[in-house]
Image 1: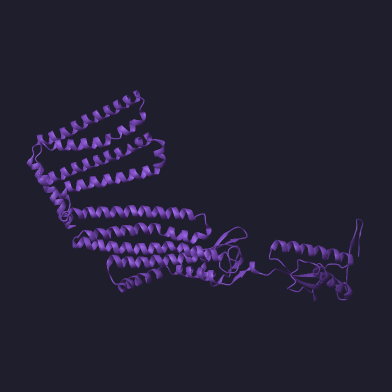
Image 2 (image 1 turned 45 degrees about the horizontal axis):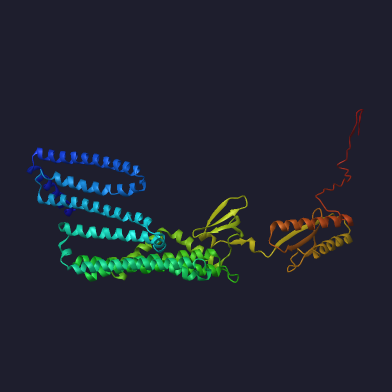
Length: 538
Protein backbone atom coordinates (compact mmCIF):
# COMPACT_ATOMS: atom_id res chain seq x y z
CA UNK A 1 0.00 0.00 0.00
CA UNK A 2 2.85 2.40 0.80
CA UNK A 3 4.44 1.75 -2.61
CA UNK A 4 1.15 2.48 -4.39
CA UNK A 5 0.68 5.67 -2.38
CA UNK A 6 4.19 6.84 -3.29
CA UNK A 7 3.57 6.16 -6.98
CA UNK A 8 0.27 8.08 -6.96
CA UNK A 9 1.89 10.99 -5.12
CA UNK A 10 4.61 11.16 -7.77
CA UNK A 11 2.06 11.20 -10.58
CA UNK A 12 0.01 13.93 -8.91
CA UNK A 13 3.18 16.00 -8.41
CA UNK A 14 4.09 15.54 -12.09
CA UNK A 15 0.63 16.74 -13.18
CA UNK A 16 0.90 19.79 -10.91
CA UNK A 17 4.31 20.65 -12.36
CA UNK A 18 2.92 20.32 -15.88
CA UNK A 19 -0.04 22.61 -15.13
CA UNK A 20 2.19 25.16 -13.42
CA UNK A 21 4.76 25.27 -16.23
CA UNK A 22 2.30 25.82 -19.13
CA UNK A 23 -0.23 28.44 -19.98
CA UNK A 24 -3.72 27.76 -21.27
CA UNK A 25 -2.88 28.57 -24.92
CA UNK A 26 -0.17 25.86 -24.87
CA UNK A 27 -2.68 23.16 -23.86
CA UNK A 28 -5.16 24.46 -26.44
CA UNK A 29 -2.49 24.39 -29.16
CA UNK A 30 -1.50 20.81 -28.28
CA UNK A 31 -5.14 19.68 -28.25
CA UNK A 32 -5.90 21.43 -31.56
CA UNK A 33 -2.82 19.80 -33.11
CA UNK A 34 -4.02 16.33 -32.08
CA UNK A 35 -7.63 16.84 -33.22
CA UNK A 36 -6.81 18.48 -36.57
CA UNK A 37 -3.97 16.07 -37.29
CA UNK A 38 -6.09 12.98 -36.61
CA UNK A 39 -9.02 14.36 -38.62
CA UNK A 40 -6.90 15.25 -41.68
CA UNK A 41 -5.04 11.96 -41.73
CA UNK A 42 -8.25 9.96 -41.21
CA UNK A 43 -9.81 11.68 -44.23
CA UNK A 44 -6.62 11.05 -46.19
CA UNK A 45 -6.53 7.32 -45.32
CA UNK A 46 -10.19 6.86 -46.24
CA UNK A 47 -9.69 8.63 -49.55
CA UNK A 48 -6.56 6.60 -50.27
CA UNK A 49 -8.33 3.32 -49.45
CA UNK A 50 -11.26 4.15 -51.72
CA UNK A 51 -8.94 5.29 -54.50
CA UNK A 52 -6.80 2.16 -54.33
CA UNK A 53 -9.92 -0.03 -54.51
CA UNK A 54 -11.13 1.79 -57.63
CA UNK A 55 -7.76 1.58 -59.38
CA UNK A 56 -7.34 -2.14 -58.68
CA UNK A 57 -10.90 -2.88 -59.81
CA UNK A 58 -10.27 -1.03 -63.08
CA UNK A 59 -7.17 -3.12 -63.65
CA UNK A 60 -9.07 -6.30 -62.60
CA UNK A 61 -6.70 -6.93 -59.70
CA UNK A 62 -9.26 -7.21 -56.90
CA UNK A 63 -7.32 -10.02 -55.21
CA UNK A 64 -4.55 -7.52 -54.41
CA UNK A 65 -6.91 -5.22 -52.45
CA UNK A 66 -6.59 -6.93 -49.01
CA UNK A 67 -2.80 -7.22 -49.38
CA UNK A 68 -2.31 -3.50 -50.09
CA UNK A 69 -4.98 -2.13 -47.75
CA UNK A 70 -3.56 -4.42 -45.05
CA UNK A 71 -0.66 -1.99 -44.62
CA UNK A 72 -3.01 0.84 -43.58
CA UNK A 73 -3.27 -0.11 -39.85
CA UNK A 74 0.53 0.12 -39.55
CA UNK A 75 0.57 3.53 -41.24
CA UNK A 76 -2.28 4.77 -39.01
CA UNK A 77 -0.43 3.80 -35.83
CA UNK A 78 2.76 5.46 -37.07
CA UNK A 79 0.79 8.59 -38.00
CA UNK A 80 -0.82 8.74 -34.55
CA UNK A 81 2.61 8.42 -32.90
CA UNK A 82 3.95 11.26 -35.10
CA UNK A 83 1.00 13.52 -34.23
CA UNK A 84 1.64 12.91 -30.52
CA UNK A 85 5.27 13.92 -30.98
CA UNK A 86 4.27 17.14 -32.81
CA UNK A 87 1.69 17.99 -30.11
CA UNK A 88 4.51 18.05 -27.50
CA UNK A 89 6.22 21.01 -29.23
CA UNK A 90 4.16 23.85 -27.65
CA UNK A 91 4.29 22.22 -24.19
CA UNK A 92 6.97 22.41 -21.54
CA UNK A 93 6.94 18.98 -19.93
CA UNK A 94 8.84 17.63 -16.91
CA UNK A 95 11.58 15.15 -17.74
CA UNK A 96 9.68 12.21 -16.22
CA UNK A 97 6.48 12.88 -18.16
CA UNK A 98 8.44 13.56 -21.34
CA UNK A 99 10.20 10.20 -20.99
CA UNK A 100 6.83 8.48 -20.48
CA UNK A 101 5.29 10.10 -23.58
CA UNK A 102 8.34 9.31 -25.69
CA UNK A 103 8.11 5.68 -24.52
CA UNK A 104 4.44 5.58 -25.56
CA UNK A 105 5.29 7.01 -28.98
CA UNK A 106 8.09 4.49 -29.51
CA UNK A 107 5.75 1.69 -28.43
CA UNK A 108 3.20 2.81 -31.04
CA UNK A 109 5.94 2.89 -33.69
CA UNK A 110 6.99 -0.63 -32.61
CA UNK A 111 3.41 -1.91 -32.98
CA UNK A 112 3.17 -0.25 -36.39
CA UNK A 113 6.40 -1.96 -37.42
CA UNK A 114 5.11 -5.35 -36.25
CA UNK A 115 1.88 -4.90 -38.25
CA UNK A 116 3.98 -3.87 -41.26
CA UNK A 117 6.16 -7.00 -40.95
CA UNK A 118 3.07 -9.22 -40.59
CA UNK A 119 1.62 -7.76 -43.78
CA UNK A 120 4.93 -8.27 -45.60
CA UNK A 121 4.87 -11.92 -44.50
CA UNK A 122 1.33 -12.17 -45.82
CA UNK A 123 2.63 -11.23 -49.28
CA UNK A 124 4.29 -14.64 -49.39
CA UNK A 125 0.86 -16.02 -50.36
CA UNK A 126 1.08 -14.08 -53.63
CA UNK A 127 4.63 -15.32 -54.17
CA UNK A 128 3.54 -18.91 -53.53
CA UNK A 129 0.73 -18.64 -56.11
CA UNK A 130 3.21 -17.42 -58.71
CA UNK A 131 5.62 -20.35 -58.17
CA UNK A 132 5.83 -23.15 -60.78
CA UNK A 133 3.95 -26.37 -60.01
CA UNK A 134 7.16 -28.35 -59.57
CA UNK A 135 8.29 -26.08 -56.75
CA UNK A 136 4.79 -26.12 -55.21
CA UNK A 137 4.98 -29.91 -54.94
CA UNK A 138 8.15 -29.57 -52.87
CA UNK A 139 7.01 -26.57 -50.83
CA UNK A 140 3.56 -27.52 -49.53
CA UNK A 141 1.06 -25.13 -47.96
CA UNK A 142 1.86 -26.61 -44.56
CA UNK A 143 5.52 -25.64 -44.96
CA UNK A 144 4.45 -22.17 -46.10
CA UNK A 145 2.27 -21.72 -42.99
CA UNK A 146 5.15 -22.76 -40.71
CA UNK A 147 7.56 -20.44 -42.51
CA UNK A 148 5.14 -17.53 -42.10
CA UNK A 149 4.78 -18.30 -38.41
CA UNK A 150 8.55 -18.37 -37.90
CA UNK A 151 8.98 -15.08 -39.75
CA UNK A 152 6.29 -13.43 -37.62
CA UNK A 153 7.99 -14.63 -34.43
CA UNK A 154 11.35 -13.36 -35.64
CA UNK A 155 9.78 -10.00 -36.48
CA UNK A 156 8.29 -9.67 -33.01
CA UNK A 157 11.61 -10.64 -31.39
CA UNK A 158 13.63 -8.15 -33.46
CA UNK A 159 11.20 -5.29 -32.90
CA UNK A 160 11.11 -6.15 -29.18
CA UNK A 161 14.90 -6.05 -28.94
CA UNK A 162 15.03 -2.70 -30.74
CA UNK A 163 12.30 -1.29 -28.48
CA UNK A 164 14.07 -2.48 -25.31
CA UNK A 165 17.37 -0.95 -26.40
CA UNK A 166 15.65 2.30 -27.38
CA UNK A 167 13.85 2.58 -24.04
CA UNK A 168 16.39 1.53 -21.45
CA UNK A 169 14.93 3.97 -18.97
CA UNK A 170 11.89 1.75 -18.49
CA UNK A 171 13.92 -1.35 -17.56
CA UNK A 172 16.17 -2.12 -14.55
CA UNK A 173 19.86 -1.28 -14.88
CA UNK A 174 21.05 -4.84 -14.13
CA UNK A 175 19.48 -5.96 -17.42
CA UNK A 176 22.13 -4.00 -19.40
CA UNK A 177 25.30 -5.03 -17.62
CA UNK A 178 25.85 -8.21 -19.63
CA UNK A 179 27.76 -8.64 -22.86
CA UNK A 180 25.92 -8.87 -26.14
CA UNK A 181 26.90 -12.50 -26.65
CA UNK A 182 24.97 -13.50 -23.51
CA UNK A 183 21.76 -12.06 -24.93
CA UNK A 184 22.43 -13.78 -28.24
CA UNK A 185 23.10 -17.03 -26.38
CA UNK A 186 19.78 -16.74 -24.53
CA UNK A 187 17.92 -16.11 -27.81
CA UNK A 188 19.66 -19.04 -29.55
CA UNK A 189 19.09 -21.46 -26.66
CA UNK A 190 15.42 -20.53 -26.23
CA UNK A 191 14.93 -20.73 -30.01
CA UNK A 192 16.55 -24.17 -30.20
CA UNK A 193 14.44 -25.42 -27.29
CA UNK A 194 11.30 -24.07 -28.95
CA UNK A 195 12.09 -25.61 -32.36
CA UNK A 196 13.23 -28.89 -30.80
CA UNK A 197 10.08 -29.06 -28.72
CA UNK A 198 7.91 -28.51 -31.78
CA UNK A 199 9.73 -31.23 -33.72
CA UNK A 200 9.58 -33.67 -30.82
CA UNK A 201 5.90 -32.98 -30.24
CA UNK A 202 5.25 -33.46 -33.97
CA UNK A 203 7.04 -36.81 -33.83
CA UNK A 204 5.04 -37.95 -30.79
CA UNK A 205 1.74 -36.78 -32.34
CA UNK A 206 2.41 -38.66 -35.59
CA UNK A 207 3.37 -41.81 -33.70
CA UNK A 208 0.27 -41.57 -31.50
CA UNK A 209 -1.93 -41.15 -34.57
CA UNK A 210 -0.32 -44.21 -36.17
CA UNK A 211 -0.89 -46.35 -33.06
CA UNK A 212 -4.59 -45.44 -32.73
CA UNK A 213 -5.57 -48.13 -35.24
CA UNK A 214 -3.57 -50.84 -33.43
CA UNK A 215 -5.37 -52.14 -30.37
CA UNK A 216 -2.40 -54.25 -29.25
CA UNK A 217 -0.31 -51.05 -29.03
CA UNK A 218 -2.86 -49.19 -26.91
CA UNK A 219 -0.57 -49.22 -23.87
CA UNK A 220 2.27 -47.53 -25.79
CA UNK A 221 -0.17 -45.03 -27.31
CA UNK A 222 -1.45 -44.02 -23.86
CA UNK A 223 2.12 -43.53 -22.62
CA UNK A 224 2.89 -41.27 -25.58
CA UNK A 225 -0.31 -39.26 -25.04
CA UNK A 226 0.63 -38.88 -21.37
CA UNK A 227 3.94 -37.27 -22.33
CA UNK A 228 2.55 -34.46 -24.58
CA UNK A 229 1.67 -31.80 -22.02
CA UNK A 230 4.46 -32.61 -19.55
CA UNK A 231 6.87 -32.21 -22.47
CA UNK A 232 5.91 -28.54 -22.93
CA UNK A 233 6.36 -27.87 -19.21
CA UNK A 234 9.71 -29.67 -19.23
CA UNK A 235 10.99 -27.58 -22.14
CA UNK A 236 9.81 -24.40 -20.39
CA UNK A 237 11.71 -25.50 -17.28
CA UNK A 238 14.86 -26.12 -19.32
CA UNK A 239 14.53 -22.70 -20.96
CA UNK A 240 14.21 -20.91 -17.59
CA UNK A 241 17.17 -22.85 -16.19
CA UNK A 242 19.26 -22.00 -19.28
CA UNK A 243 18.50 -18.27 -18.94
CA UNK A 244 19.48 -18.28 -15.26
CA UNK A 245 22.69 -20.15 -16.09
CA UNK A 246 23.73 -17.78 -18.90
CA UNK A 247 22.76 -14.52 -17.17
CA UNK A 248 23.99 -13.77 -13.66
CA UNK A 249 20.69 -12.46 -12.38
CA UNK A 250 20.26 -10.49 -9.13
CA UNK A 251 19.70 -12.51 -6.01
CA UNK A 252 15.94 -11.87 -5.79
CA UNK A 253 15.34 -12.62 -9.47
CA UNK A 254 17.51 -15.73 -9.25
CA UNK A 255 15.56 -16.96 -6.20
CA UNK A 256 12.28 -16.51 -8.06
CA UNK A 257 13.69 -18.38 -11.07
CA UNK A 258 14.92 -21.27 -8.89
CA UNK A 259 11.51 -21.51 -7.21
CA UNK A 260 9.81 -21.51 -10.63
CA UNK A 261 12.12 -24.29 -11.87
CA UNK A 262 11.44 -26.43 -8.78
CA UNK A 263 7.69 -25.93 -9.06
CA UNK A 264 7.71 -26.74 -12.78
CA UNK A 265 9.72 -29.93 -12.19
CA UNK A 266 7.12 -31.08 -9.64
CA UNK A 267 4.32 -30.25 -12.09
CA UNK A 268 6.05 -32.17 -14.88
CA UNK A 269 6.48 -35.31 -12.76
CA UNK A 270 3.00 -35.38 -11.28
CA UNK A 271 1.24 -34.38 -14.48
CA UNK A 272 2.99 -37.25 -16.25
CA UNK A 273 2.02 -39.66 -13.45
CA UNK A 274 -1.55 -38.36 -13.52
CA UNK A 275 -1.79 -39.04 -17.26
CA UNK A 276 -0.18 -42.48 -16.83
CA UNK A 277 -3.17 -43.51 -14.71
CA UNK A 278 -4.98 -43.96 -18.04
CA UNK A 279 -2.67 -46.93 -18.65
CA UNK A 280 -3.70 -48.51 -15.34
CA UNK A 281 -7.36 -47.90 -16.18
CA UNK A 282 -6.85 -49.51 -19.60
CA UNK A 283 -5.24 -52.62 -18.11
CA UNK A 284 -7.92 -52.97 -15.42
CA UNK A 285 -10.64 -52.60 -18.05
CA UNK A 286 -9.08 -55.43 -20.06
CA UNK A 287 -8.93 -57.53 -16.90
CA UNK A 288 -12.56 -57.03 -15.86
CA UNK A 289 -13.73 -58.05 -19.35
CA UNK A 290 -12.34 -61.51 -18.80
CA UNK A 291 -14.74 -64.27 -17.81
CA UNK A 292 -12.62 -65.61 -14.95
CA UNK A 293 -12.83 -62.59 -12.63
CA UNK A 294 -15.38 -61.21 -10.17
CA UNK A 295 -14.74 -57.51 -10.83
CA UNK A 296 -16.71 -55.15 -13.05
CA UNK A 297 -16.35 -51.71 -14.62
CA UNK A 298 -17.57 -49.98 -11.46
CA UNK A 299 -14.50 -51.26 -9.64
CA UNK A 300 -12.32 -49.75 -12.37
CA UNK A 301 -14.01 -46.36 -11.95
CA UNK A 302 -13.52 -46.55 -8.18
CA UNK A 303 -9.80 -47.32 -8.53
CA UNK A 304 -9.49 -44.54 -11.10
CA UNK A 305 -11.06 -41.98 -8.77
CA UNK A 306 -9.02 -43.00 -5.71
CA UNK A 307 -5.68 -43.04 -7.55
CA UNK A 308 -6.30 -39.67 -9.17
CA UNK A 309 -7.21 -38.11 -5.82
CA UNK A 310 -4.03 -39.52 -4.25
CA UNK A 311 -1.86 -38.19 -7.08
CA UNK A 312 -3.48 -34.74 -6.84
CA UNK A 313 -3.01 -34.62 -3.05
CA UNK A 314 0.64 -35.73 -3.19
CA UNK A 315 1.33 -33.36 -6.09
CA UNK A 316 -0.18 -30.46 -4.16
CA UNK A 317 1.98 -31.24 -1.10
CA UNK A 318 5.21 -31.39 -3.10
CA UNK A 319 4.24 -28.29 -5.08
CA UNK A 320 3.66 -26.34 -1.86
CA UNK A 321 7.03 -27.51 -0.58
CA UNK A 322 8.72 -26.35 -3.81
CA UNK A 323 7.06 -22.93 -3.68
CA UNK A 324 7.32 -22.21 0.04
CA UNK A 325 10.56 -24.05 0.80
CA UNK A 326 9.14 -25.27 4.11
CA UNK A 327 10.02 -28.75 5.48
CA UNK A 328 7.73 -31.62 4.64
CA UNK A 329 6.93 -32.24 8.34
CA UNK A 330 5.56 -28.72 8.72
CA UNK A 331 3.40 -29.04 5.62
CA UNK A 332 2.09 -32.46 6.65
CA UNK A 333 1.24 -31.16 10.10
CA UNK A 334 -0.70 -28.24 8.65
CA UNK A 335 -2.40 -30.41 6.07
CA UNK A 336 -3.16 -32.99 8.78
CA UNK A 337 -5.09 -30.43 10.81
CA UNK A 338 -6.87 -29.20 7.70
CA UNK A 339 -7.56 -32.77 6.59
CA UNK A 340 -9.04 -33.60 9.99
CA UNK A 341 -11.38 -30.63 9.73
CA UNK A 342 -12.40 -31.65 6.21
CA UNK A 343 -12.89 -35.27 7.30
CA UNK A 344 -15.15 -34.21 10.18
CA UNK A 345 -17.15 -31.95 7.89
CA UNK A 346 -17.45 -34.60 5.19
CA UNK A 347 -17.72 -37.75 7.28
CA UNK A 348 -20.98 -38.80 5.64
CA UNK A 349 -19.37 -38.47 2.23
CA UNK A 350 -16.37 -40.52 3.37
CA UNK A 351 -18.68 -43.18 4.81
CA UNK A 352 -20.45 -43.45 1.48
CA UNK A 353 -17.12 -43.58 -0.35
CA UNK A 354 -15.84 -46.45 1.79
CA UNK A 355 -19.22 -48.13 1.52
CA UNK A 356 -19.03 -48.01 -2.26
CA UNK A 357 -15.51 -49.46 -2.09
CA UNK A 358 -16.73 -52.36 0.05
CA UNK A 359 -19.57 -53.00 -2.38
CA UNK A 360 -17.09 -53.09 -5.27
CA UNK A 361 -14.83 -55.57 -3.43
CA UNK A 362 -17.46 -57.80 -1.80
CA UNK A 363 -19.89 -57.64 -4.77
CA UNK A 364 -23.16 -58.56 -3.00
CA UNK A 365 -24.90 -57.28 -6.15
CA UNK A 366 -24.06 -55.81 -9.53
CA UNK A 367 -25.65 -53.44 -12.01
CA UNK A 368 -28.76 -55.09 -13.49
CA UNK A 369 -29.47 -57.33 -10.47
CA UNK A 370 -32.94 -57.58 -8.96
CA UNK A 371 -32.53 -56.79 -5.27
CA UNK A 372 -34.59 -56.11 -2.18
CA UNK A 373 -32.79 -53.69 0.15
CA UNK A 374 -34.43 -52.26 3.24
CA UNK A 375 -37.91 -52.35 1.74
CA UNK A 376 -36.78 -51.11 -1.69
CA UNK A 377 -37.26 -53.67 -4.46
CA UNK A 378 -36.14 -53.25 -8.04
CA UNK A 379 -33.22 -53.44 -10.47
CA UNK A 380 -29.82 -51.85 -9.73
CA UNK A 381 -29.15 -49.18 -12.36
CA UNK A 382 -25.92 -47.62 -11.06
CA UNK A 383 -23.40 -48.05 -8.26
CA UNK A 384 -21.89 -44.60 -7.75
CA UNK A 385 -19.33 -43.22 -5.35
CA UNK A 386 -22.05 -41.84 -3.05
CA UNK A 387 -25.18 -43.93 -3.58
CA UNK A 388 -26.67 -46.93 -5.34
CA UNK A 389 -29.61 -46.21 -7.65
CA UNK A 390 -32.43 -48.78 -7.79
CA UNK A 391 -35.25 -48.65 -10.33
CA UNK A 392 -38.39 -49.96 -8.63
CA UNK A 393 -41.08 -51.90 -10.48
CA UNK A 394 -43.46 -48.88 -10.57
CA UNK A 395 -40.66 -47.01 -12.35
CA UNK A 396 -39.37 -44.84 -9.50
CA UNK A 397 -35.61 -44.27 -9.14
CA UNK A 398 -34.53 -44.65 -5.51
CA UNK A 399 -31.06 -43.60 -4.34
CA UNK A 400 -29.78 -45.49 -1.30
CA UNK A 401 -26.54 -44.23 0.34
CA UNK A 402 -23.70 -46.72 -0.07
CA UNK A 403 -22.90 -46.54 3.62
CA UNK A 404 -26.38 -47.94 4.24
CA UNK A 405 -26.21 -50.47 1.42
CA UNK A 406 -22.98 -51.88 2.88
CA UNK A 407 -24.50 -52.39 6.34
CA UNK A 408 -28.05 -53.67 5.69
CA UNK A 409 -29.28 -57.09 4.56
CA UNK A 410 -29.62 -57.13 0.77
CA UNK A 411 -31.73 -59.86 -0.80
CA UNK A 412 -30.26 -60.49 -4.25
CA UNK A 413 -33.16 -62.09 -6.09
CA UNK A 414 -31.19 -62.15 -9.33
CA UNK A 415 -28.70 -64.72 -8.04
CA UNK A 416 -31.15 -67.41 -6.98
CA UNK A 417 -30.49 -70.71 -8.81
CA UNK A 418 -34.09 -70.88 -10.01
CA UNK A 419 -37.60 -69.87 -9.02
CA UNK A 420 -39.28 -71.93 -6.33
CA UNK A 421 -43.01 -72.62 -6.25
CA UNK A 422 -44.53 -73.59 -2.92
CA UNK A 423 -48.29 -74.06 -3.16
CA UNK A 424 -51.20 -76.20 -2.00
CA UNK A 425 -53.80 -78.05 -4.05
CA UNK A 426 -56.97 -78.88 -2.14
CA UNK A 427 -59.59 -81.58 -2.79
CA UNK A 428 -62.95 -82.08 -1.13
CA UNK A 429 -63.39 -84.04 2.10
CA UNK A 430 -65.59 -86.64 0.45
CA UNK A 431 -62.74 -87.72 -1.82
CA UNK A 432 -61.85 -91.39 -1.13
CA UNK A 433 -58.33 -92.17 0.11
CA UNK A 434 -57.49 -93.99 -3.12
CA UNK A 435 -58.37 -90.92 -5.14
CA UNK A 436 -56.31 -88.72 -2.84
CA UNK A 437 -53.38 -91.05 -3.42
CA UNK A 438 -54.11 -90.91 -7.14
CA UNK A 439 -54.07 -87.10 -7.03
CA UNK A 440 -50.62 -87.14 -5.39
CA UNK A 441 -49.30 -89.57 -8.01
CA UNK A 442 -50.73 -87.52 -10.88
CA UNK A 443 -48.95 -84.38 -9.70
CA UNK A 444 -45.67 -86.28 -9.22
CA UNK A 445 -45.88 -87.79 -12.71
CA UNK A 446 -46.62 -84.42 -14.32
CA UNK A 447 -43.63 -82.72 -12.66
CA UNK A 448 -41.31 -85.65 -13.28
CA UNK A 449 -41.87 -85.41 -17.03
CA UNK A 450 -41.27 -81.63 -17.27
CA UNK A 451 -37.80 -80.63 -18.48
CA UNK A 452 -38.26 -77.14 -17.07
CA UNK A 453 -38.10 -78.44 -13.48
CA UNK A 454 -34.72 -77.91 -11.77
CA UNK A 455 -33.66 -81.50 -11.06
CA UNK A 456 -30.96 -80.47 -8.55
CA UNK A 457 -33.83 -79.67 -6.23
CA UNK A 458 -36.16 -82.69 -5.85
CA UNK A 459 -39.90 -82.30 -6.36
CA UNK A 460 -41.89 -82.61 -3.13
CA UNK A 461 -45.55 -83.64 -3.28
CA UNK A 462 -47.32 -84.77 -0.06
CA UNK A 463 -50.82 -85.13 1.34
CA UNK A 464 -49.94 -83.12 4.44
CA UNK A 465 -52.95 -81.41 6.05
CA UNK A 466 -56.61 -81.76 6.97
CA UNK A 467 -57.82 -78.22 6.44
CA UNK A 468 -61.08 -76.80 7.68
CA UNK A 469 -62.85 -77.30 4.38
CA UNK A 470 -60.45 -79.46 2.33
CA UNK A 471 -57.76 -82.09 2.13
CA UNK A 472 -54.44 -80.38 1.38
CA UNK A 473 -51.76 -81.61 -1.03
CA UNK A 474 -48.45 -79.74 -0.66
CA UNK A 475 -46.53 -79.11 -3.93
CA UNK A 476 -42.97 -77.79 -3.99
CA UNK A 477 -40.70 -77.58 -7.06
CA UNK A 478 -38.10 -75.25 -8.70
CA UNK A 479 -38.17 -73.75 -12.16
CA UNK A 480 -34.68 -74.19 -13.65
CA UNK A 481 -34.14 -70.60 -14.94
CA UNK A 482 -34.17 -67.33 -13.02
CA UNK A 483 -36.80 -65.64 -15.15
CA UNK A 484 -39.93 -64.60 -13.30
CA UNK A 485 -42.31 -64.45 -16.26
CA UNK A 486 -41.03 -67.69 -17.76
CA UNK A 487 -41.63 -69.32 -14.38
CA UNK A 488 -45.19 -67.98 -14.33
CA UNK A 489 -45.83 -69.40 -17.80
CA UNK A 490 -44.53 -72.79 -16.64
CA UNK A 491 -46.76 -72.66 -13.54
CA UNK A 492 -49.73 -72.04 -15.84
CA UNK A 493 -48.77 -75.05 -17.94
CA UNK A 494 -48.56 -77.27 -14.83
CA UNK A 495 -51.91 -75.96 -13.58
CA UNK A 496 -53.65 -76.86 -16.84
CA UNK A 497 -52.17 -80.37 -16.82
CA UNK A 498 -53.29 -80.95 -13.23
CA UNK A 499 -56.74 -79.55 -13.98
CA UNK A 500 -57.24 -81.84 -17.00
CA UNK A 501 -55.93 -84.91 -15.18
CA UNK A 502 -58.14 -84.31 -12.12
CA UNK A 503 -61.21 -83.83 -14.31
CA UNK A 504 -60.52 -87.12 -16.09
CA UNK A 505 -60.13 -88.93 -12.77
CA UNK A 506 -63.21 -87.29 -11.27
CA UNK A 507 -61.27 -85.63 -8.49
CA UNK A 508 -62.98 -82.50 -7.30
CA UNK A 509 -61.16 -79.40 -6.12
CA UNK A 510 -62.28 -78.01 -2.80
CA UNK A 511 -63.60 -74.56 -2.30
CA UNK A 512 -64.86 -72.83 0.87
CA UNK A 513 -68.23 -74.43 1.84
CA UNK A 514 -70.47 -74.48 4.92
CA UNK A 515 -72.60 -77.49 5.98
CA UNK A 516 -75.55 -76.77 8.36
CA UNK A 517 -76.95 -79.67 10.45
CA UNK A 518 -80.58 -79.28 11.77
CA UNK A 519 -81.28 -81.15 15.05
CA UNK A 520 -84.64 -81.39 17.04
CA UNK A 521 -84.50 -79.74 20.47
CA UNK A 522 -87.66 -79.85 22.70
CA UNK A 523 -86.69 -76.58 24.30
CA UNK A 524 -86.30 -74.96 20.92
CA UNK A 525 -89.12 -76.24 18.68
CA UNK A 526 -88.48 -75.88 14.96
CA UNK A 527 -91.02 -73.69 13.24
CA UNK A 528 -91.27 -73.65 9.48
CA UNK A 529 -93.52 -71.12 7.83
CA UNK A 530 -94.63 -71.54 4.25
CA UNK A 531 -96.18 -68.54 2.63
CA UNK A 532 -98.26 -68.51 -0.50
CA UNK A 533 -100.75 -66.12 -2.04
CA UNK A 534 -103.83 -67.47 -0.25
CA UNK A 535 -102.81 -68.37 3.30
CA UNK A 536 -100.07 -69.10 5.78
CA UNK A 537 -99.50 -72.66 7.06
CA UNK A 538 -97.74 -73.34 10.35
